[in-house]
Image (cartoon, rainbow, N blue to C red):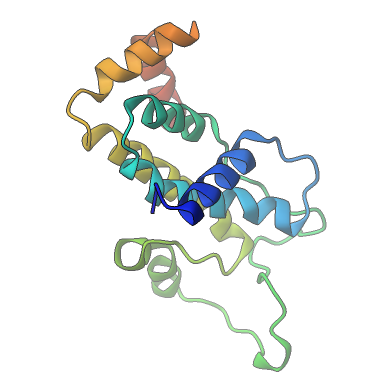
Length: 166
């Protein structure tokens, strides 16, 4: 929860992870942005100041989905060691349920490497939509934030966002 010490610490660390570029493609560097996006996705809409919400909006929008770690040639490889559990193929329904459990539980489950990008993008776009819809004058706040930062206009930002979706 924002405002509490542990909430502020989680928020600061998640912002650092998303702002930093992934230099090496090991498992931790691939999964860290996924966790950071999911955490920011749940914390960002609860921020009280418009400036912080705008900053988080821009940070989330610029964040990119991670790829696979080095050495993973098949995206269906499981994450973690199963030991004596064995392995099984997920049906499409199980895969759908794993990726959409965010509606019930808040965080997506990353069981295979191909899930990482989907969970990241779902958390990112869910957070962006919540930031926009939970503030009645978010577009004015964002336009003022962009103008003060010397960045693009709101119309060019909107065009860039639509281009990313296409």
